[in-house]
Image (cartoon, rainbow, N blue to C red; front, top):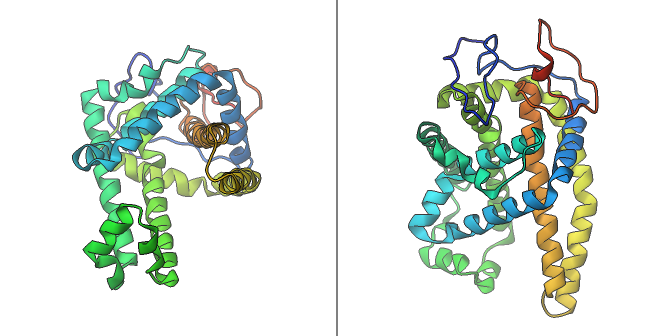
Amino acid sequence: MGPDSEPNPGPDRGPGSDPRRTGQDFRRLPAARGLAWIITAATLLRQQMWRLVLVALIMQVIMGLTRFPVLGLMIALAIPLFNAGMLQCFHHVRRGLPLSPVVLFSPFADTRIAGRLFLLGGIIALVGVMVISWLLSGVSELRDPALLARLEAGDINAMREIDPAIIRRALIALSIGVGVSGVMGYFSIPLLWFRNIGVGAALATSFKALVKNWQPFLVLGLVLVALSLPLMLIMGLLVGLSAVSGGPGPIQYLVLMFVVLLIQLLMFGTQYCAFAEIFELPGNMQEALEVEEPSGPQDDDDQFVA
C-alpha cells in the first residue's frame, strides 16, 4: 500500500490507533467471509435491536425530507454523513456501549471530516446522475417537463402513457446509477470516518479493496439474493392483503415498516462488518468464529472476528 498521512483518531471511534498501520492498509480475505459478515451483522443487530431500529427510523424520517427542494438537496449530499453515523452505531454496539440516537449525528460534530463526507456525497451524486443521463440519452419522452412534473406528483396515468420499454430502460439505468454510487461509497465513507484520510485516497483504496476481495463479496451477494426471496414473498403477501382490504391496515403497515428497517439495518451491519475485518478496525466484540491471521505481527485487540 502507498504511504498515507497519520490518522487522527477520535476518542470514541477508535480508528487508526495502531501506528504500524496506515489508513490505506487492508487485507484480502477468503470467500467464506462473505457469509460470516451477514452472521456477525445479525449478531450485532440482535444485541441492541430496538435501539438500532429507533436510529434507523429517525434516519428514514430525515430521508423523507428530501422531497423539499433546497433542504432535500442538502440531505442528499449529507447521505454519506448519515451512512457514517449508522456505521458508528454498529461500532458502538460491537464495543458493548449503550447506543443513543445522538450517535447517528456524530459525523456532523467533526467539521473537517464532515466537509470531506459532503464533498464525497457531491462526487457520488454527480457520477450517479452522469451515468443515468448517459444511459438514458436519446429518450426524448423523459425530457418533457410537463410529463416529468406529473410523474413527480405521482400521477399513475402519466406512467401509463410511457412506452413500457422506456420504463424498463429507465429502471435499468436507475439501478446501474445507484449501484455505481453504492460501490463508490461502500468503503470510502467508512475510510473517511474511521481512518480520516483524503477523499481521493478513500475512493482509490475503496475500489482496490473491493476488487481484491471480490470472492467474499460474490458470496455475500449470492447469500443476500437467497435471503431476499422469502422476504420478497412476505412483502408480496402484505401488499396483496393490503390490496384486498382496500389499503394497508395499521398492523400491516407497521409489520412492513419493521421488515424494511431490519433489512436496512442488516445492510449497514454487513457493510460495517466487511470494513471492520478487511481494514482491521479495532473493537471488543466477543469472538465467535476463528479467522485466518494476516501475515506479520498483530495485537489481539486488532482482530475482527465474525
